[in-house]
Length: 143
Image (cartoon, rainbow, N blue to C red; front, side):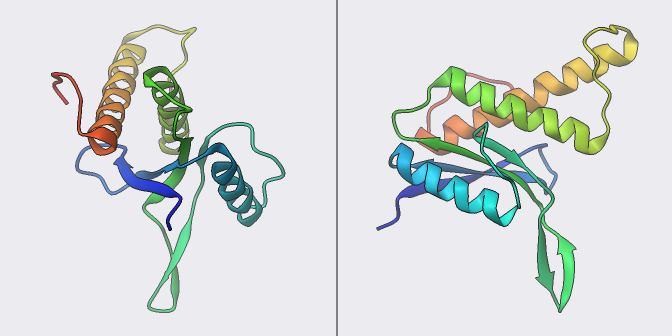
């Protein structure tokens, strides 16, 4: 019996990059999975349920970069709207780092305003996808 539900969260509409979401039946299975994932990524400990990375897969005997850029882990009964938004914010932060999108909260200028809107749009898009794929319910949204 599978001990989790999984689905993809596309980072930007129309782009290939995504985070894989896992919702485990209980906390222990989430921790075991995370420990195995971190072991494969050569990480010593887990401090968050969002893991961002550069993954590779083999295509025609060549290593190519995977479209999966991370994993977000939850367990049944261990999350709500706030936790989901919190973990997806971590994913968006890493996406900004990966794409070298500058977003310094201490320096509000015209570039900051654009980055702020991009950040909020990606966050909203990913959070809405999560709730649609998790339970099919989301309020009226523009994303």
